[in-house]
Length: 367
Image (tube, helix red, strand yellow):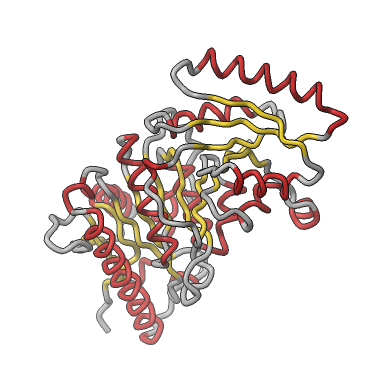
């Protein structure tokens, strides 16, 4: 029986050629096939196809290219891409629109990624010999076709809303691959020059687990800032955002996080408010620390408007929620810490709690 070519991943043309060279160095036959995700646009996205008997080795090379199996630890000094994982839901549309606006202002590249469950990918142990299975091949082809069709339809709506010419200004790249969303997102952000991850919280019930259920995992484990877009966020152009509230607990990483925050909002006319929720018995000490923070920020960012304020309250979560409503805050920013599993189960961080409470975008920095 003749062997059949199987699609293992859909990549931007440049990345696909890198993968093709790696595969051919391993003696794996590889073909590239154009994918027209946007009608009328010159193709820059291709399917990477290999013979079914080479799937084991091919998947390893895909993982290495996209960071799941890094060959060595990389340090990227000048991150530039905005990464948006999508699951074709309404909140994913909001996330892409937000990411597009940010990429436009920062003159950064926009990368849109979708991971789907492939029957073949997750039924082949790396060390085993692949048995020919026509049913499995058909299921894999159907999963790949459905993912690409959904991706194409999803893009069509967005490009129509934004406009083809404006859309091309962010030099968009598209990645469609079999995998687990949380692993693929983290791996890509660690391996590629990524400035920010924009991800939706919520999602269409017909696409369980693709984005909504992995948001907290991405937030905890990403080494780059993560902007979480809530499903019930009221539509509002980013240019109309006026206030970003950074919730501080006087952590030593605050100024590192604020540097990253300023790098993201530097082209927007927004006011940055550093707020601390404190208790009456620590009032004097908290005020002194806030004044010191304010002096440092004003000296470092002379052209930006800053405010540092103390908010009195016994419960941090309730106090912040009340402040967000009363002060018309547009984005809440804070720093989270990586914790062990037991700690995460019994003492969830403020960032994790706020992910499921706030109705405005949440910008999370990892300490």
